[in-house]
Image (cartoon, rainbow, N blue to C red):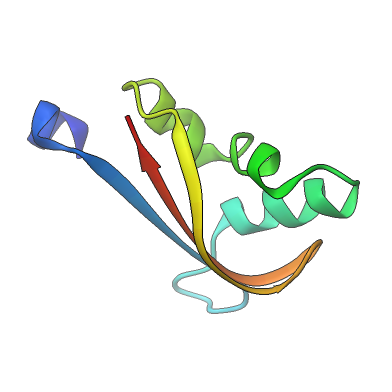
Length: 83
């Protein structure tokens, strides 16, 4: 995406789901693992694959937009990552 659109990209919206085979996300698994160990959600988000890739391009502000489930057992997370 960044190669194709470069500086035109203003934000990245991560739509992370648990259980849907085609849409299953390692990001939500990482957030669940870390939050079940006592880490804060915003801190856990910064440890995900998508956040780390976005940060390489200067996108370092992450905001949880919507969630379903609970700490350590989220089933759905929507995360907005901006510069």
